[in-house]
Length: 116
Image (cartoon, rainbow, N blue to C red; front, side, top):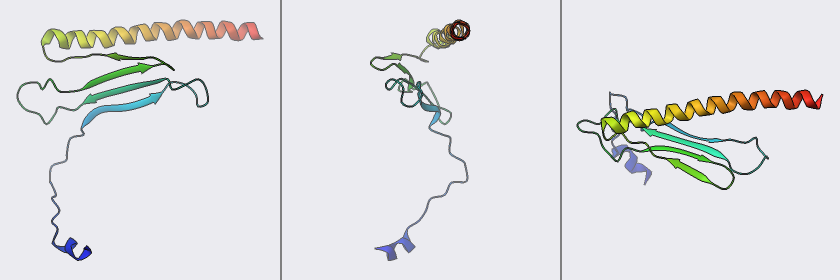
C-alpha cells in the first residue's frame, strides 16, 4: 500500500487556519491526592472565520464542579441584551470570586497565627 503514497496529494493552504477555540481548558481545583475530582472547564469557540449572522450553535461552556456536583453556566450572544447579560454574568462571578479569595486569605492568615 505504501507505493500509493507517491500519488497522494497534500493540500497546503497559504493562509494560516484560525484555531477552533479561543479558550479550551480543563483545570483541576485540588492538589493531587486531595479530595475528589473538583474542576473548572471553560470553552469558547472561535467564530473569526464565520461570516453573516451569528450562529446560535456557537458553544460557550463554563462548568464548575466539586467532588459530587457540577454547575453549568449558560451564556448567549444571540441578541444585544443577551450579550450584555453574558458579560455582566461573568464579571459578577469574577467580582464574587475576588471577594471570596480576599476574605479566605485573611482567614488563612488568622488560622496560621493561631497555630503559632
